[in-house]
Length: 431
Image (cartoon, rainbow, N blue to C red; front, side, top):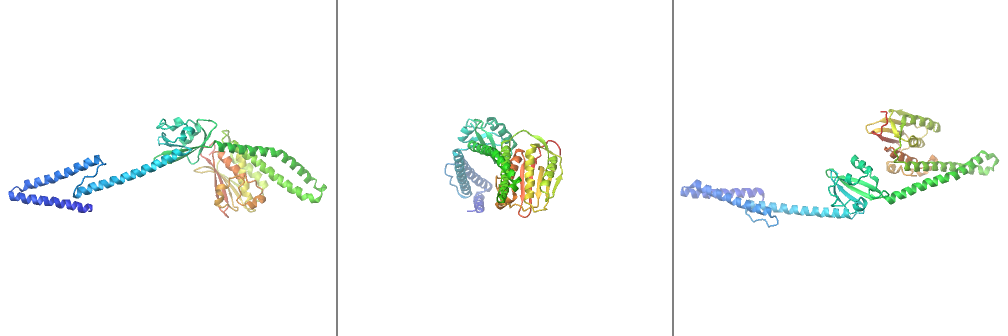
């Protein structure tokens, strides 16, 4: 029965009771008394039903009381709502138990931190990796228990777009990678992974490349020296070996350039977190570079657009290498006569150094991999352009070492724009 029908049925019953009571009272000459008694009986019945419902609500495990009419509809509605709520709570509890057991089984440390910065829960792996335990550390401040300066700065900055690499609070030889995910009303989920083996292998790789590159420089210098000697005395040699000597000299120069880039990349990677910095005048750097690049590539007009005298804290030689790689790439991949523009200006995001060309452009599908070592968009052009494939990798590490960002905007046939964005707080003077 619908709620509307139940209401009208209850009203009809009351009217019938009142009418019968009024007729009986009229017969005995006590109309008002009989009507009052009838209404009191109806009210008493309702109070009794309310009392039964109240007792049932205090003991919901009991069956709902049987009641006629509208009271039966009320108890049925409350009963079905309670059953739905219990089913939803059971499903929610099942999901929470499944999620909790999944997180507890992870080998990575998982910590749930409230919006006030206190620990709400952590799994068993957090004990071996971070030294945290539940219930001992429950409701304790995470910054009080994990006393690492880099973690404190990372956590309070509230910028979790990139993971944090830090030393373990339990073992200085152990390297941890921490990722933070925000959920709910400011709560945070911390995932901490032991990456000691990965970082150790990465260091071995860097040291190997640096050492091999350094060791190869001496024999390569000797070979190049003899090849220059042969080239200068080519008139004394058989004409048949003239071309091989020139080809060997060309490849030796290319290998020498590759070794220089490998050594530079190894040095930049090694000093990426260095705190030593000087105030680098970008205006002065660009003017010197424009003169040098202009002499090497006279076929490409280079125009500087200096709109700021801001000085960047960092390393002059590294910034020079990064910017020169961007400008040289712009010229290599542009048709003869195509201009290259360099902008140095202040924006709402920070100070931007942009290199803009009108070259062949790059399909956006390649953008994520452009800064990988030896990655080439068009492998058929590797020999003709004479590059080593390490230029943008060097740019990436120099940019990271200066707390900046590399932004790439390019499309096939529409040229390219490479922008180094220095944050606003990296200010050593100038505006």
